[in-house]
Structure formats: C-alpha cells, structure tokens
Amino acid sequence: MFSVLFSSAVLAATIQDTPTTITKTQITTSGSAERPAIFSDKIIWQDYRNDITDIYMYNLSTSKEVQITTSGSAEAPVIYNDKIVWMDGRNGNFSLEKPDIYVYDLSTYKETRVTTNGSYSTSPAIYKDRIVWTNYSSSVQMYNLSTHQKSQISSSESMIFSPTIYGNIIAWEDFRVFREENAQVGSNTSDFSIHKKNPTRDICFYDLSTHKKIQITTDGSAAHPAIYEDRIV
Image (cartoon, rainbow, N blue to C red; front, top):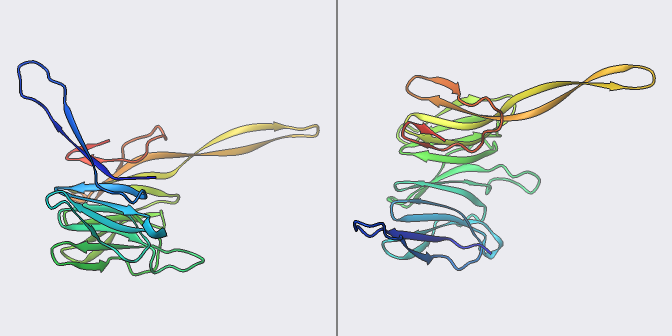
C-alpha cells in the first residue's frame, strides 16, 4: 500500500532552540501512489489505481485532486512551473513497450507528444523550457519547448541512467566504463587467462554553454545525480 503525504515544518522564532512542529497531511487514499514530485503548490505522482497507471496532481492551494492522464500507461512524472512531463507506453505493443515522452501544459490544458520515433524514451527531467531523457538508455536527448528543437547531448557504448537538468548543466549516471581483471585458471593440462568485466557507474555532466562533457567521478560507484545551482550531488 502506498500513499502520498506532505509535511510542513514551523520553527518558533525564540532565543532558545525550540523543537520543530511537523504537520503531516495524507493527500491520497488509493493505496497505490508512487514517485511524487512537487513544484510550488502542485504535487504530482503516478498512481496504479484501477490496475492501470496514470498521473495525478494535487493542488495545495485549492485542496483538489486532478487526473492529468487517461492513457493508463503513464509513469515517472516530473514538473516545472506549469509543465508536467512523463514517459508513456500508450504507443507500444504487447511484445515490446516503447514509451514516449509527453508534456502537459496546465495553463493551456494541452498535451503534447515530444518523441515520435518509436524509440525507448525514459527517465524524463525538466528545467524551464528544456526536457531531457534517455533514449534506449544509450543516449541523453533534449527537447526545447520554446524552439521545438530536439538534440542529442551525449551517447554511451553501454548505458545511461537518471538524467537531470538545472540551468545549463545536464548530469547523468554513465554505465559505460568496464574494468578488466586478469585471472589465471589452472587445469591438469594447461593454464589460460580469462577476463572478468566489472561494470562501473560514474557521474558525467554536459555544459550547454560551453558544449563540453566532463566526467566528475572515477570510483565507479556513483549513481542518481541531482543538481542545484552550481552543485552536483
């Protein structure tokens, strides 16, 4: 059972430290809500109610819930200002789902399909008028809502996960590095070498202002980056 909740913290302004008072409010009762995101007074999430997956929104100012999608296959929602973005498998088939990226404009009540090439587009993120996502988990793609232009930011011979964007910086988890280790295997007749490949995960980012890609971790164990201003964590 899953529910979406939010809390508000009120800190008393006194000379002495005062314990924080937390008020928790449950905003869903479906028991199947996941992956919440928030911007301003709007909370969004994916909900498995009725055995299908759709995106819902709760407005903290009006205390009202609104269903955003009706496809039954919408997942991984993100929000910035009045734009809600998600991945949607409505154009797939029973043998292979091929999710596309969609955006919904709360100010115009208009839904737009961003990707139309039938590729496996997942893990969207948004900042202002830029949407980023992974394509078949092998490249980072970007769409500019103002210019309606698509562009490829980076690609990998292996896999790319968890793209995120803030300002001119796009960061992601890169699964492209393999470390080879030699191991001697003995037998009664001969010895021979085998190679064991251990996958590694590192964080890379791309600067849209300089058009440069930089790998910022080298220990092979970094995952799920987040960005705020000039900081990547």
